[in-house]
Image 1 (cartoon, rainbow, N blue to C red):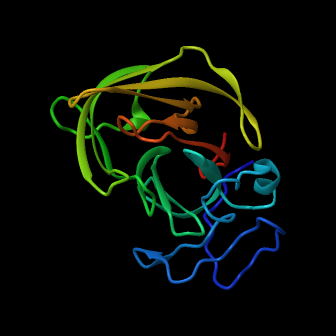
Image 2 (cartoon, rainbow, N blue to C red):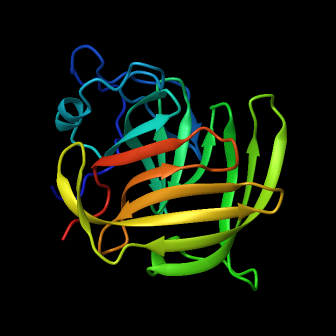
Amino acid sequence: MGRFRAAHFFGLVLGLGLGGLVMLGGCSFSSSPFWATIGSFVPGQHGDIAARAKKIPYASIDLSLGRRGGLLVLAEQQSGLTYWQTGRAEVVVLNHGFLQSTSGLTPQLEMNQAIDAQGRPVSMTALGSAAHFVVERSWIDEEGVRHTGRARADWSCDSAARSVELPLTTRDLYKCVETLDWAGGGDTRSVYWRDDGGHVWKADVAAWPGAPEISWQVARPWWPLR
């Protein structure tokens, strides 16, 4: 499958038929152009994800937030951060495949960081099969109220890989579970599926207590394959 680049172009419209690519105008991040993906991030946009992904020569993910979702194309990549934008300027940011933040969505994750007991950043990609650390996050709920939270994290991965079907391939992946015990009360559980190199191919994430689940699976990866 190889490595697929981000989509950078001006004035190009790909003729993919109904549900194809829709171009954005006037949206930017750090002066870099973003452009729309397959339709808007709304109910009913999933359809045949595999068929759509096959037609697009760019890195892409199938992402869902609650009942909404669709195929998103990589718009920008900077130092491990990847930016995925919809036709309604809703943006999801992943940090080495882990959820970092969202914008234009309600509710909205503003910040996410993992630290050790001494307050030093924890690299999620470097985690082994078991680890303990602290997660700090801030978010805005559906009423527009900003919250901050801190949780003790327990990370645990299966010792054996299992076959996981993805939109364009099937791969042997390890199931990793992140359980968060929040200081304000409540627990959350997120599941990540990663390969031998630590790349996340699939995830089901509860970003904070009561948050809608956000899930994604990689169609075309943005890293080189072995």
